[in-house]
Length: 171
Image (cartoon, rainbow, N blue to C red; front, side):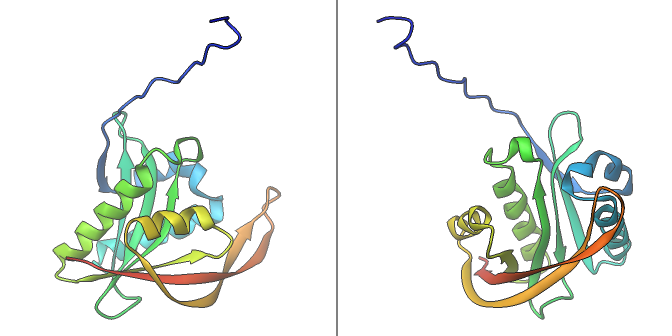
């Protein structure tokens, strides 16, 4: 076999992760998850976590720095935990971290005695929707959504999108 026809395959690496509650001390290392405006919003949600209205999770590797984060809102839909603001460090997407985050969130939901998880996914994000479908989520409706987005110069603009609403019955 000539060197040009040889095929090189990347080694398969397994790195253990753990899921824990996100803390305010984590936020400086989570800039990959969104703008400063978004991170201020996440910080505000941590106050709701202290009140038990939401949970905000962090998937961490050995350095204990978050590589995926996301929230569960227990106030958004009666009888359900609503997953939102799910994000994975871009360089580590498609490595199973999103799956670990969603499964941990589902465990938290069932530990509260709830049997349904819900989420909304942007219609322009088929990759995320495919993940949720693979994990058993089923689309049931769509609705517009929007939020403020911060530009590099610090100015804010409104981002409008359409989201597919999905749900899953939990064991």
